Length: 141
Image (cartoon, rainbow, N blue to C red; front, side, top):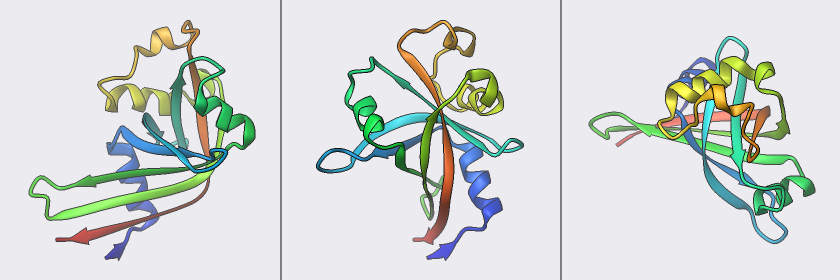
């Protein structure tokens, strides 16, 4: 195992578009896969959550904005695996405030909705992950 530098962590976040976010549940963590974008110049990690305010993820956020977030990748030959773990707070934001990160989300994710429609969607809420800590590592198999 080798630790990743901050530059390697930001590179990994910039070239990926899907991760797993874990909310604080009432009994156990509640992890779900999400599309995300990372704006390298602005150092903003953005996600969008779909659904109504009564969904489990929003109930968890009402209890606490603290989340964990994980992204991993491997090279084409599956000889090197890399992962990044981020802890922080998920805070509702405006699309304009985190535009470079949401543009990255649109580029990196095939399932992300058209960013022109984001501001009109009633069931999609934009969030910024305010990073408290991050770490990364790589494994050679």
